[in-house]
Length: 260
Image 1 (tube, rainbow, N blue to C red):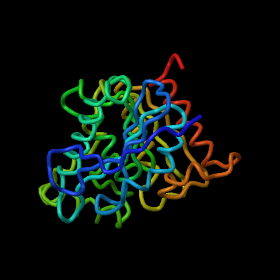
Image 2: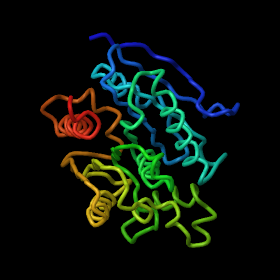
Image 3: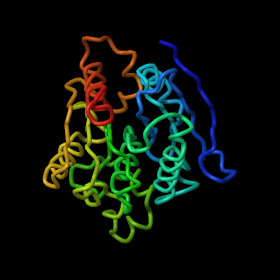
Image 4: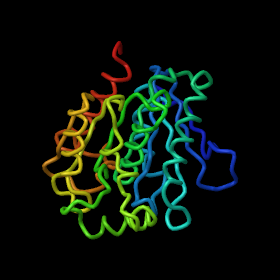
């Protein structure tokens, strides 16, 4: 199957800021669904290029894929990153007819801090603007600094949301405290060897979503470190990490392409 076409640095906001761009991967034949990839990097680093290999893989499978970047700490702090990702999602949805997918069949996918931002899209006040599904890998879902929060993660959260941290208002950026019964179906993938974002973050997220009545699937990797997501397409098929990729395949097909 043809890999389709690629459009680099498409601007998704009416702004001259260099961060307000996305790379667009269009399939030769669309299956009707789209994926929004949000990179990690502690809200202070990272690049949309991190997702390129995975986006190319899913494009071959028929998905429209976009990899967005956003403003970073310290130049911008919360809620700038959330606002940028909301704008990227809105732009993607507006291109549905042009790019040939269904605007109601979009999944937001993110790793680490990108997983946090994807999860925040599932808590947008306007339910109609939320994505249809979430995939959160090694994701930060509770920013309220629980006792098991590593010092490094505590520092990242303080730098990301200094005002909220100083005023004990970290629930304002904590998906597990913002989600409701209309939060999209969610796949959580986490490595048991993650020493940056404890896997308890995803365990608690699944518990919270289950209480809310939201379909939530948790896939744990026995050998998974932090930040494994970007290398998934290159793993041996018999590996635990490749099994996580197959879990993504099944989840996305079930939630976005039920007739596929």
